[in-house]
Length: 281
Length: 281
DNA sequence: AAACTCCAACTGTCCGACAAACGGACTTTA
DNA sequence: TAAAGTCCGTTTGTCGGACAGTTGGAGTTT
Image 1 (cartoon, rainbow over the protein chains, first blue to last red):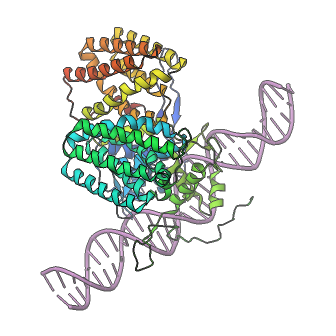
Image 2 (tube, chains in turn blue, red, orange, yellow):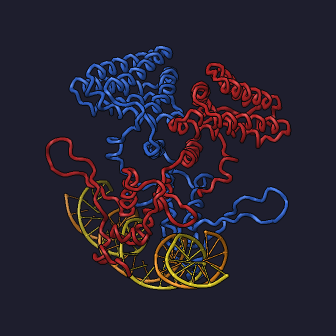
Image 3 (cartoon, chains in turn green, orange, cyan, purple):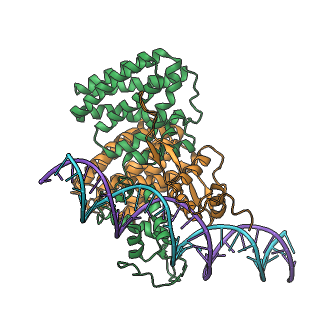
C-alpha cells in the first residue's frame, strides 16, 4: 500500500465526534460554552467546504480519492463518503465524466430547482408568484434593454419564432416551455447572478402553471406571442421603457388569462411538468 | 431479529444500480434510450423525497430507522445512510432532538444561506446586489403597508429603537445586524414565501457588507435610523406610497454611503460576518 | 401522577471485501 | 507515426458485520 494507515491508529473508537463550540457565554459567570458536537461526517463536509470557499480548492479541481481523503482526515472511508454526499447535494462538488469528483460552484440551476421544490412544499399560491414576478419582470426587461448582448438577442428572436410555431400547432406543452425560456433569457441578459437567483425559482413554477390556460384560451397564447415580440423589439432597439411597458402588460395579461381559464389563484400551485425529468445529474 | 433479511437475498451484487431512463428517442430509428444509471444512494434519496413531495410523509413525521429503511428498500444500511445524507443537506429531513430524523419542508433560512454562499462564490458585486434590492425593497415596503400584522409592526418598532441605541453607542456590528433584521421583517410582512426567498440571499450579503461604512460615516447611520423610522411610521399608517418612497430613498442612500466610505462597488463582496457562525444544525 | 430505572433500539464510526467502470500506460496495426 | 486496441492498477459503489454511546420509552417505585 502507499501511505494508507496514516491517522488511522486510534482503533475503533466511535468517539462522539469533534467539538464545534456553540457560542461563548455572553455575560460573566461560568466559563463554559454550550458545547455542541457535530457528527464527523459533517465536519468532513465543512472542512472541504471551507477549502472551496477560501479558494484553496478551485472550481474544476479534482478532489482527492475517497480513500486518500479519509486517510488525510483520519476517518473511515464510509464516514468520508457521507461527508461527500452532503457536499454533492449542495453542488459544491460535482461528478465530471461519471466518476471522479471535482470542486465546483453551485450554479443557479441547482439552487433554483431546490428552491422551487421548497416553494411547492410551502404551498405558494399563484398570487404569491405573480406578485413577485409582477415586480421583477418589468424591471428585468428595462434593465436588459441596456445590457443585452447580440447573442441573447438572437436567442430571443429565435425563441419568439419557435413560440409562434408552437402556438400555431397548438402544442401547449412547448408553449409554456418556450415562454419560460423567453423570460429566462431576459433575466439572464442583465448579467446579474443575484437577479437570476431571485426570479428563477418563482418563474419555474409560475409559467409552467399556465399550461392548462394555453389549451383553454387559444387567443391567450396569441397575445403571448405578440407581447414577446414587442418585448424583443424593444430590447433590440434598446428602448427600456417600451420593454418594461410590454413586459408589464404581458405579466398582467398572464394573470388574467389564468383566471379566465378557470384556474384558481389562491390555491397552491401544482408541480406536474416541472419535476418529471429533474434527476440530479 | 424482527423481519430483517427481507430483500437482502441477493448476495453482494454491486450491480450498477437502478436504471432511470434518460430521454426517449426523438425521431425514428433505433428504439434505444440513452440509459443513465443513478447510484443506489440517489435512488434512495429520490424515493424518500418523492414520499415527502407527494404528501405520503408529512412534515414532522418520523422517518423509519436506518435499518428499517435499508431493509424496506433492499439496500445496505451504509447505502441508505448516504441517501439520507443527501436529503439532510436538502433540508427535507431534519434532526429533531438530536438523533431521530423527521421529514420536513426546507425553510427559507437554509435555502437562502446556501444561495448566499453560491452568490459569494460567483463573485457578485455590490452593484449586482443593489440593483436587485433597489427593485425589490421599495415594492416590498409598499406591499407590506397593506398586509403587515400588529406583531410585525411591534417588532419593527422595537427594531428601530434598538438600532437607534446601537447607533448612539457606535456599535457598527449591531447596526448592520439590526438593519438586516429590519428589512427582513418588512419582507416577511408581505406573507409571500416566494418573495422572501427572492430577496433574502441578496439582502444577507448586501446589508452586512456595509459594516465598514457605518464606522467611516457616522451620519450615514443616523440617516439610516431616520429612514427606518419613517418607513415604520408609513407602514403603521398603512401608507403604501410613503413607505415605498422612503424605502427607495433609503436604498439609494445606502449605496451612496457605501461609495462615500470608499468601498468599491464593482468588487466581489466579501463574506466575513455572514459565515462565522453558520453551522448547519 | 410524578420521578426514577433500565433495556432495547438507534445512530455514528469503523473494518474489511469485492465487482464493475474508468483512466491511462503500453502495444499493435494501418 | 498516429490511430486503434489491450491490459492493469485505481477508484467508486455496495455490501456485510461490529460495537460504543445515547436515547426514548416501558415498566416500576415513590
